Structures are given as structure tokens and as C-alpha cells.
Length: 79
Image (tube, rainbow, N blue to C red):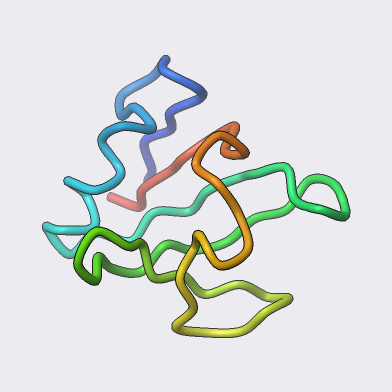
């Protein structure tokens, strides 16, 4: 199953993403990217950065190299 958060509502909030990543739980986020709606997997924290797998840009990339947290419209974790 999964738990879903959408911009501050639901079981987890966008602000809870660092806690989930720090505990080893990947987070699937929906965001508005340069080419429209897009999904990436946030894999882990590295310092203050979120490391993601992006189907466009590839694995092990800093989220903020391409996106901002303000572009996220949903976050889900697999439980």
C-alpha cells in the first residue's frame, strides 16, 4: 500500500519528505516541471539535498539541480 500527501493534506506532508528520506523511505513526488506534469523518486538525503531518480535526467541527481520544492503537488510513500 501507500500513503499520499497533496500539498499539506493527507497522511504525510511535503515538509515531512526529509524525515521520510532520513529514515530510508523513498518518496515518489509529482511535480510541475519545465515540460508539464512529471514524477520522480526521491531516494535519500545527502546533507540538506534530496537525491532523486528522474526518468528524464537519470539516477543520483540533486533534486534542486532541476526542480524546486514549490513545484511538488503530491508526495507518496510505499508502506
